[in-house]
Length: 226
Length: 167
Image (cartoon, rainbow over all chains, first blue to last red; front, side, top):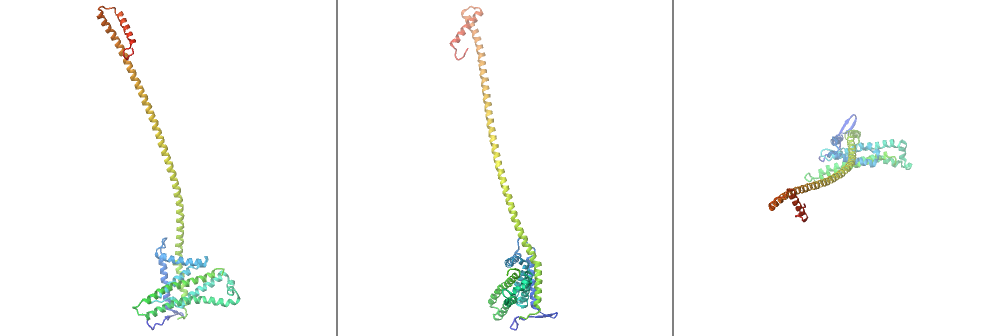
């Protein structure tokens, strides 16, 4: 990494007339592989008395299930695999960028906006299914007709804030890691270490926020009472 | 930096694939394990409760049996004591009767012996007296007269009592 490194630039790949950020895709696949391997290892030979991997896995899943149950009610269990996968993937993806030579897939807006749009699309589909098309359309004009503008902005703001918050945090973290590497000589590692530790924390918090907000959006679409 | 392209679609597909794989690999087995454990714990608690009740019953039963055994033992001891008492009385009675019988036999024997001795002595005394009197007098009366004399003499002695012996 030198001064010539252009922060945030991606290697491009072209396939079937489409352009892909191939480095983001590689990092995504690595993250996916790590999550799958971890989950695979943690859930093989499940026992009555859990081992440490199984215990950790159960801790995470039970905590998220508790959150889902309390936020989304009984219907929320259907969304549990999606939300748990989301959390685990984001956690690993956020931390991946902390390893030298790797970058977080979540520092690319394509990833975060993709996930946010997926969640929001699901929210709208579930709203229509659960409330019926008429009630769904009507809810944009609540409490009075002119509020349609505000409601639309709110709906558009949801995926935008969701995606930019995560991307901004992780991207800024990576940028600062690079900049600290340039500014501070390698034999004074303390600022780097402190920032890396903080980034670990940020990675957990951002994954958690993204998951919890998705959960609350989804719960709004599932509950009949608004 | 914020250039959107087809990566967005690819990421959505990637994530959906991840969700499917994780659900299949992790979520379902884990949920099953959690449910199994919950069932196992519930069952264990239930079994423990059941066994506790059984143990309580057994304890009660044992206590009853113990009390029963104790009272039986008490009864046996009492019976044995009574029997021993009875046997003792019987033996004593028997011994007393035997003792009395032996005493009576001995007394009879003694009196019979004395009777015989007395009779013998009497006849000896008579013949001795006659012999002595014959020698003293020098002439013999006839035997019948002699015997009459002596017997008369001895009978008169009876009145004055000779020692303890009763003639």
